[in-house]
Length: 135
Image (cartoon, rainbow, N blue to C red; front, side, top):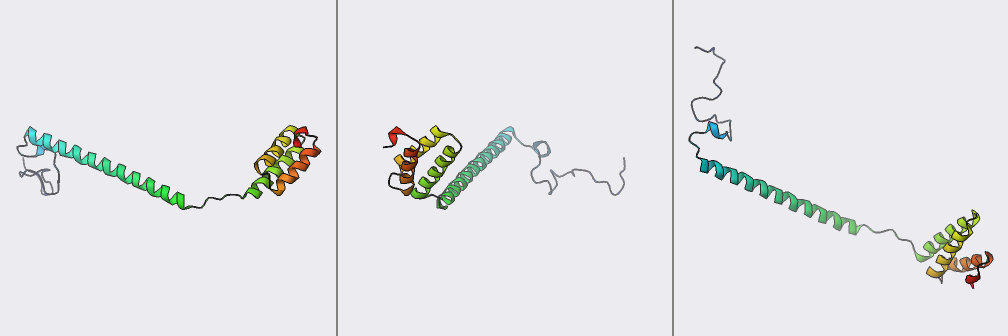
């Protein structure tokens, strides 16, 4: 049977075309089972090495991120600002009629920040709310 000009056989009589970099074993001439097993083992070893590299790079990236996070300064309030904030919260509770919760927050201010200006104001508020343990 004759073929027209533009038709080419997919694989010429040579083992495989140059463009086919890694042909399947059935296209290669005389490939032994030992060679196939060796190539399979090499392929698995390359995959294992690649997985190890990826894991190592992921861990390194995580360490870099952690070091960068540690460099970011943490926003912290001073003790006076914390005491004022808790006192403000206690006043809100007292204004809303939640007396017990307000007393609890006033007590926290007095116990946690005894020397602050907010603590002295909290002591006065506790005395006004008729708290026997305020003295």
